[in-house]
Every structure is written in C-alpha cells, then in structure tokens.
Image 1 (cartoon, rainbow, N blue to C red):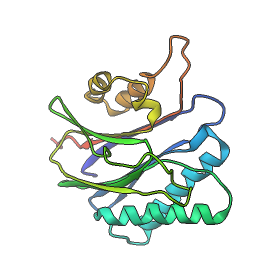
Image 2 (cartoon, one colour):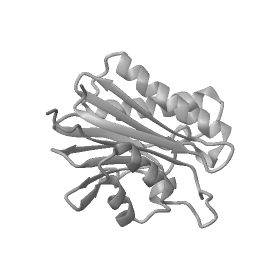
Image 3 (tube, rainbow, N blue to C red):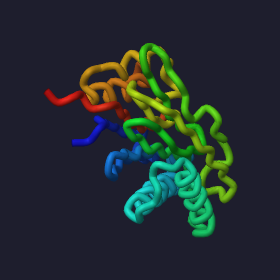
Image 4 (cartoon, one colour):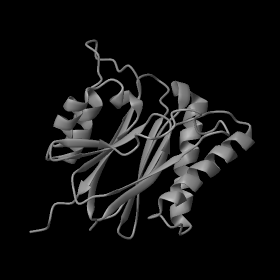
Amino acid sequence: MSDFETAWHVEPAGKTGADRVSVLTRGDATVLVVADGAGNSRRGAEATEAVLRGVQDAVEAGADVKRAETWREVLGRCDAERMASGQGGETTAVVACVTPRRVVGASVGDSELWLFQGGESTALTEHQHRKPLLGSGQARPVTFELAWRGGVLLGASDGLFKYADLRRIQAQVSLSDANAAVLALAALPRLASGALPDDVGLVLCRPSAPRP
C-alpha cells in the first residue's frame, strides 16, 4: 500500500487539449507531473507528452528521484531534445517527488504546485521562470524542496490557478473523497455558460489514511 493517496483529472476546454498529468511510484516515492502545452495545440500536446516520457524514463532508469537537481536535469534535457528535434511545441512542466518526509522537484512555466495545510497555503513553485517555456531551448527550470508531515499537495495548470480563487481551491482540496475533490476543483473555472476558459489539468496528493 502506498504512503499516499493520489487523484487526478484532465479536462480540455475545446477539441484539442494539451494539458497532461502523470503519477508514478518507485519504492516509498510518488512522482507527480503536470504539463501544459502552449496554445492548446497539437505541437503543444506533443511537447507535454515528451515531458511525461522523459520523467518516466528517468524513474525506470533508476535516477535519484529524491534529489531536486535530478528533476532540473531531466527538464533541461527535455528542453534541449525538444529543440533539437525541430518539431516545435513548447510546454510548462512541474515535476515533484513526494516522500513521507520531503517534497522535492523542479518546474518551468506557469503551472504550479501548492501545499494546503491547516488553513495555510504555500506555493512551492513561486520562484519558477514563467518564460522561456520548455521546448524553446532556453528554458530555465528552478528546483524546490520542502519538508512536510501532511496536508494536501495540489499541482495544476494555469487553467485552474488563473481562473479560480485560492480560497475556493482550498475549500475543495479538503474534501474527504480525493476523486470528488479533483472533479470539484476542475469545475471551479467554469463560466456561467458551462464552458471552460482554458484546459484544466490537476493532480492531488495527500498521506493515505491509516489502516484500521
């Protein structure tokens, strides 16, 4: 049984969605990935998928997932490889490795990772560079690290954080059912018409409830 409970959801605003999320596990570590392709385009989607593959390859190859610098290197490599491919397409990226004691990772762009705990909220990605994006060949991923003993981690694209008030987000992450929480969070940016102003991709992670 994993030390963590995770739930995720991706909902495109139109026919072509470019948000992607992924959850991987290795030992006591859970790796969360959020990527948002520029322009909600096909090439943006290809860039996000390249990030997911790069992270999965690193996990499967035995990289030191508990080291923040590992994820800066992985994102830097993805940036260079995407540029060298000549296929175009750019994306944001947040990669976080969660263990029972720490959260470490790296990010670039305007997708974000927050910790919600005891009525307080902390942006782990507050120092990231919003531009250039990954795929430009000039991305500058920034690492983050935080000791933690609980609370809820929420990673999401700007489709959530740009269009939903932080207080409303905090109210939904505390729902006891994690799957209900991510669906409620994804619905927050909806307009009165029912449409979404942007793609929404998000992943929620919290300590598993103790077994009886």
